[in-house]
Image (cartoon, rainbow, N blue to C red; front, top):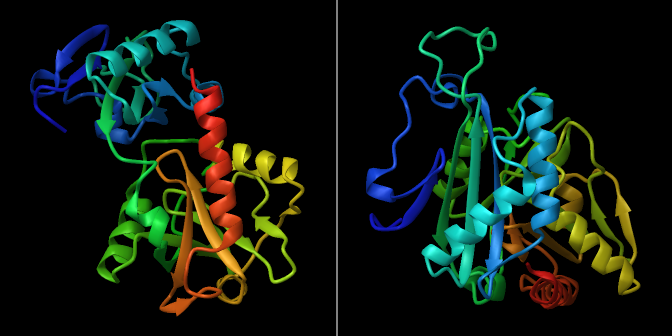
Length: 288
């Protein structure tokens, strides 16, 4: 991020170089906070209602109240986009329980002002090289906690999985538990079977309810494609016709290699390419 980029910190717009929070912040000490990331296309917010609904759900799961109303938060997001002249990229939101002066595991007994920060990240999404060529993925044991449906800032397991994937020359990791793929380290995992079914794991506490996942599944069904929610193994994914991932940061991105084995033809498949095109078209039409 550029040092002169404009961020939002607890009610003030400041340059990145001057953005500061307390060393007593509970996110820093306990990972006691949640975050959300929304894509920006043509200077507008993509799937913003879905992202903020998930943000509010995550806060409620941690017994936190939103620092701002949804309308006020959207206004700040738009201001961040405008002040950074962001045409394409991401807006990041993070709220924590705040910074009490005493370090103690239970929630603070006295009222504490929550910490709220937002920043923008310029990133090419439409013309991403990974989308055109596809990406390689490595399978990694899922070592996360039991409430993965909460978009918590506790991301160490994902960091280690991503690092293991990078060391193997891969762009993403598929997290595996009890023999089945839960999701990507920072994405939702999909396969397309040889019979044309699009398969992804059903929602539960085991996975994050991806906003792009929801949109892509709806678009697939509207296009007359069969979508099935069930678990699948690495072996089934390796033998699938196609594989792809979805997220706010990658939209729909084909997976062409898994644990060193090519998937399908070893090139981006027609289903993933079609869904990516449909998603981008719809995102541009509905962005706010």
